[in-house]
Image (cartoon, rainbow, N blue to C red; front, side, top):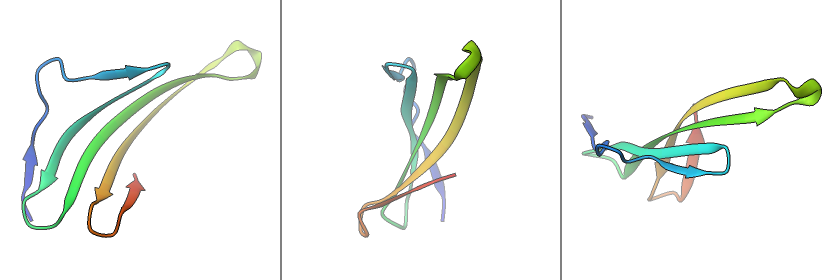
Length: 66
């Protein structure tokens, strides 16, 4: 397996408080990778930052979050 990086310059998409972009794919398996970062407001007006790498399996039609 080789990871192929495909991050374009300025390639982020913002949706409310979540930003995500494709970061690459597997050149052997039907797998695509994306990174997502989110900012959520919690009780007491504190904030939580989350960061996830998402693997999308096109053959099985599944996503796995790391």
